Length: 366
Image 1 (cartoon, rainbow, N blue to C red):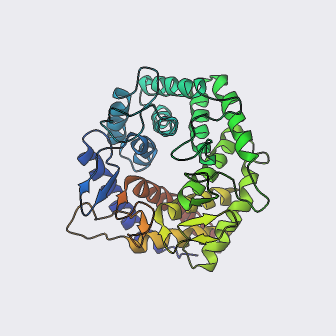
Image 2: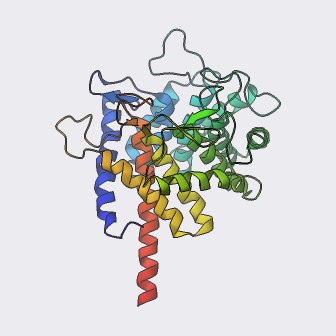
């Protein structure tokens, strides 16, 4: 496991990555730019990932930044409570997006928990009610996503913010709807831990990014419902697979995996690394197993190793690439804001866990 002195290095990476996230907001002039490309510069802002960057900004002590982007998101909410898909400003063909709306709820409910103002929970409630209005009987949505014919399993990452909104408002219709969706996704679990339809398409393969989305959504739903045995425990076979691969590959994971947990391609998805580290640490909160912490640390170390903390180009300084090598199939040649967001989250979670372990050992030896 990483030594306690690694905390100083993690702090440096956290500061640099957090600074990059702030620059993405400054360049977005409202929301956070979706990504930076050395060839084309900063993209337009992305409401979806701006939404779930809010809890990260709050964790980093950037309350005013979080409030600013929260107000911006409220200002672009549709009258029916939804938010559009894609970048902002939207194309004329843009439509309301289930997934994007769900991720924005994550940020607005975080602002509510931070006692930032009733307007944020009101906007979240309207968004959540819109989500419920479009649900099918199975608690998912009829439209699918991208090239998928059915709602992907990573929409557990929408059900989680719906439950956060339920907790904030007491609207039991949100809980009941989310529970139906959770049951449908859990029914897709295979004996080897794989969840069918975990990717962007109908193919039984997925980026580690969306695999981690699927597992995180279920883990958080389990927490909010107090239902580890019924929900959270169902993710453990997949988490064990990911941990084992991390150990065998010395802190790396393939960028894509198929339903037999075999690598697809020869690149890494750095976002998936950071997300998986977070998922492992959430699991470890129950298991208290330093082997799991070690796996998370290796994944975080791998992402840190790809970063440049001192670069004359501000868009690259502290950025996290989509793929490694950068020309891999996930977010090719781009540095997405969600990679930075999840890397910050993983650095915070790991640092806290290592600090607590160091304190425990110090107390035990005194």
